[in-house]
Length: 307
Ligand SMILES: NC(=O)c1ccc[n+]([C@@H]2O[C@H](COP(=O)([O-])OP(=O)(O)OC[C@H]3O[C@@H](n4cnc5c(N)ncnc54)[C@H](OP(=O)(O)O)[C@@H]3O)[C@@H](O)[C@H]2O)c1
Image (cartoon, rainbow, N blue to C red; front, top):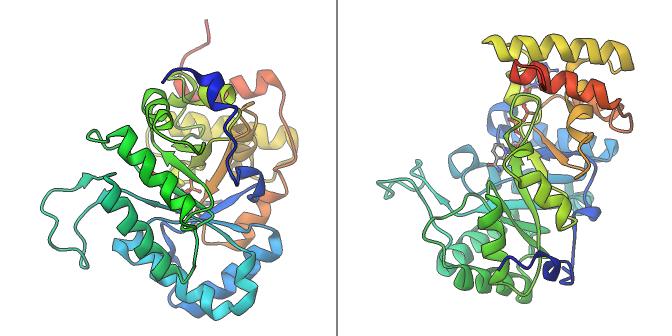
């Protein structure tokens, strides 16, 4: 189970290398776009910018985001084939559509994972997902059974690759031990406002097994822009200085450049519904910052020196 070197010999059919340098997330799409036509226009512009990987999940938008995305993609016709789709499943919550759930919970049992992926594919209008992630770790997960279920998604052509989200390092290793294919990522929260993954081993693990983490809410889910509380105010100020020093045109670009500076080469999953903001961030992704400047943001985030 802990033989990590063994994991490196397992080769998946698809890896994060085939994804765009920024991934766009659909979590907020039902609030950002009034109809599928305007959503399709946004997706078209994303494609022009080269952001061709879309992150979604069965539960987004009260279980409505995947159908909304699927319809917008259909309206784009064959142009939509350029997009890689990452979806997640395994959280069961009540919504207008699923009223029978009394207690929200995580479920990575083989039957549920399979059902969830089949439903996502139907809603998205796709034959296969480029990447399927287990959204949250299910404490009742049987690694061998869930591992088989993930392998079968690949074997049966429902997913080209599989991974996890919000898993600890031990949960990642446990699930990997029950599989033939390689998990290709752990999608985690990581930003100048959320730096826990630096200390709890999750980013170390990604480097160790030579995988790239996907990082959700890299702009602090918008908290950088309307900072409430001392941490966000300190970080915003430090990012403004960083942006000035490196001519990054804004704290959003500065936050992304800071995130990308980690040697595990995180892939940011951003959520703005404004194409100009995505263009601004993209102009900065090839830039890098000095070692000390990276620490300046970390110190601002933690509110204490690195003594
Ligand atoms: N795996 C998981 O458990 C998990 C959890 C959460 C999210 N995710 C994924 O991560 C994606 C991104 O999450 P997120 O939306 O929280 O990411 P984010 O990029 O950190 O935050 C997006 C928010 O910041 C605002 N924003 C961005 N740039 C701005 C600017 N320059 N000025 C003012 N406001 C700005 C956006 O508003 P505007 O739209 O107005 O620009 C939006 O409300 C989600 O869509 C989802 O795919 C995954």
